[in-house]
Each structure stands twice: as C-alpha cells, then as structure tokens.
Length: 399
Length: 178
Image 1 (cartoon, chains in turn yellow, cyan):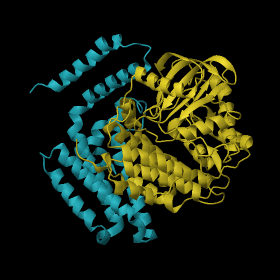
Image 2 (cartoon, chains in turn yellow, orange; image 1 turned 60 degrees about the vertical axis):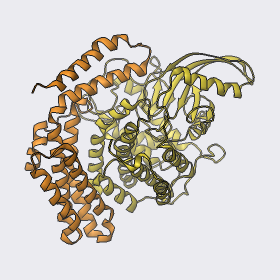
Image 3 (cartoon, chains in turn green, red; image 1 turned 90 degrees about the horizontal axis):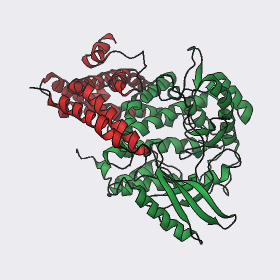
Image 4 (tube, helix red, strand yellow; image 1 turned 30 degrees about the horizontal axis):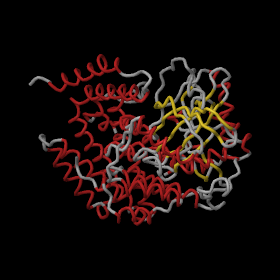
C-alpha cells in the first residue's frame, strides 16, 4: 500500500487542521480524537457476543437490580454506525420491572460521519415531545464501557419504504406510490418544520454551540467542518472541491435565526407504520447541529434524493412532495421564510459535504479498514461522482 | 495467454452465489447485505478490469483538460508550474508502455497543480480568480462524466440516459466534441 501521511497523521498536521478550521468545540473534540487514534490498531468488527459483554458490563455498573439481555442481533441499514438490537428485562427505578426492545448504536473505529453520541443523546431526549424519535436510555459518551462512544435507545417499529417492489429510478431515492405520498408527504414537511421551530436552549442541548444570530459564525463552522474533514481524509486533489471551498468561504451568509438542523433529513431516515402510514420515528440525527434551516432545505431537496413523478412532469422532493408544494407547506408550517440566495449557498455546501463524505472519508475508512461495514462504505464511491456533478452544476450557477 | 483472471473472478462469484450464500444465516442482515455487495463488486470488476488501463490513460487526459483550461485562464506567468506538469503528463501519455502507477501519478500531479492554483486564486485578483474557477468548473465535466460512466454497472445510475457509452469516454470521443 502506498504511504500516505494521512494514514498516520503527525501531531503538527493535526494541530494545523485545528488551527486553520474553527469549528464547534464538541466537533473539534470528535475530529481530533479520530485523528489521534487513526494509526492505532483497533478491531473494526466486534462479534455480537463481545458487544453483548460490553453491554453487560455497562448495565452492571448502571443498574441496581438484576437484568437479562436476550435476542441480540445486528441491524442493517446505514453505513456509518454499528447497530445491535436486543431485549432487556430490567427494573426501572421509576416504573418497575419491564422489558424493552432496544438498539445499541456505536461509533465504528472511524465513522463515515464522525459525530458525537453525547450530542445525539441530548438531542433525542430533548426533542421527543415535538417530533417522533426513539426514547433514549443511556449513553457511553467517551467509550468507558464500549470500545467507542455508544448510545442506547428504544427500538422503533415501522418501515422506511413501501413494501412493494420499487420502480427503477436513477439515483438513491426511494419510490413512494401516490397513496403513500399523500399520507407521508405532509408529515414529512410538518416534522421538518417542527425541528426548525424547536426552541434551542443551553439547558436542553448543553453540548451544542449556538451561533450568534445575524452573524456568519454558524455558516463558517459548517464550511470549516467540511473543509477540515476533506483535508484530513482525502486521497487526492480534486480541483472542483477547491473551487467550491473558495466560493463558500467568500460568500458566507449570515444566519438570521439559529435553528436546530437535522443534517440528513430524507427518505430512509424516518420510519412509518405500514398500516396507518403515520410517522413512528425520525432517525439518524448524527449530523445535527444548531445553525441555518436552509442547510436542511438544501440537503433534503437535492436532485439525487428525489425523483420525477410517474408522468415525468414534477420533481418530488425525496420522492414524497412536489417541489413547489414542499416549500409552500414548509413556510406555512414553520413560519420561516425561504431565502433563495441562502438556498444557493447551502446547496453548494450540502454537495460539498456529500462529496467530502463519499470521496474523502469513505476512501479513508475503507483504506484503513476502520468500519465493520467497509464494503458498504466502499459502495458509496458509486454515487460520489453523481454528487460531484451536482456540485459542479450548482457552482456553475453561482460562480 | 488465456484470461485466468476472468476465470477466477467467475469462479469466485459462482462460489459466493451458489455455495456460500445459501449457507448464510438469513437472520443476519449484515452478512446477507455484505455478501450481496461483495458479489456485485466482483461482477463489476469482472466487467471493467479489461478496460482498467484505458481508464487510467483517460484519467490523465481528463485532468490534462482541466489543467489546460486553468492554464489558459491564468496565463503563463502564474501558470508556469502547471505548464511543466502538463509537459510531464504529455511525456507519460506519449509512452505506450506507461503502466498504471505512472499514469495515476501523472493524473495526481496535474490535479495537484490545478488545486494549488485554485487555492491561491484570490492572490490573482477577482477577475482572474473568477476566470480560473469558471474554467475548472467547465472542464471538470469530462472527468466527472467519465467516472460516472465507469461506475454505471454498479446500478446507481443504471437508468441514466444522459451518459455516453464507455468507449466514447475512454477513447476520447467526448473530449473531441468539446
């Protein structure tokens, strides 16, 4: 294997990245930790048995009464976290003896989306009254009991896509037949509006930094995060990424009202009941932060995540809602306006982040065998150039 | 020489599909998912590896196209280093026996030269910076299209109708049309 200093980054490189790219302190902590540990050898795969052992040790230290773990098994879906489902028979001091179906969600040795389980824990605990999310139980924020930071939450019932065979589409979108769109579309928009309306407080989300309103601080944190990870992970130069970084940095917009941003709000990241078609959970909050709502709007409305309707007349955002209707409904439900100029900036940012993940981080994770899902992560290369072409087209409109 | 690689890849796909797959626990979604992905990758490699050398030569040409456009935008004074890199890449392309490591190195050398220029763009003044960036955006299309076509059998763009045939992108027909 050809030597690449990013495989074992020297401390001066790690420090240079920290100095050059100002990000939120909690994000800096996660990124620095992964770079400092990158050259260490850790098993990328743990058996169900050994993961259950770690779980047992944590619960023995956490619970006063006896408990039983059963039915441990892997969950698939998603390439960035290791997820195990299990049943826990235990005594909750507040409610007594109970059995819960739970999910253990652990960061791999290096993740496709390096992120904080502590933040995910705080967020799920805080937002549960506004948006359907899994109930959280415990977090091992620093990997005290598990090899890596780990979150434990309730298993949510539901499915991510209609059970019938999907029609062939180009891209990675999900096809929802009209009767599903009618039921799911309004909930999709309403939940996004609720996320953005969620009152962010330091008490509820202590690990999140709130950027100053009417300043460029929040947008700069995001472009710096993307640039830093690209610099830390990439295998080669891609001049288009440098053009994007220049344009993003020169044109950083102000955030009017800092909102909670989901970060990866799309089809596949929510569950619904197949009978009632009601949302049962919004999942995968690992990219969440406090910033500009336009980041979610730009990401969610990406061409690659949506598709044309059956008549090839209307573009459906995430395969669910016609584009114009999506923005009308969103503005009505959230009370927020949609600024076309900021949409353009966040479209470029979102594409930049997607290419950074699929061509930069995915390459490094696979090269160093850092994930139990290396082959799933490697597969992302097949969408990377589609995303880069979207980035190129977005830049051509604004440069 | 017989194509032993094709034979072995075919045997590997057969072994995984017909022998290993039925033995995998259907209740282990990770194992099932990953086995299917491994089979898909092997099929992709079996389809594409005979053209691997063509891809690497095309890769140099695509980056050379970006480099030429960048050089034209910034002019010879700022572009001296890039001009040297283009000359080096031309020598590699002119060498019929240049192997994949040399081709890959030439491609990366060109990309690094363009990226260095773009990172320094603000020092050239707003008009030159804009011209350079617009040139890179336009010239990157061939490079991105080429990779999209190469990866098309993996299925993500299986239904795409706007992509040219593989031969056109690998042998330069698309660049000739620009």
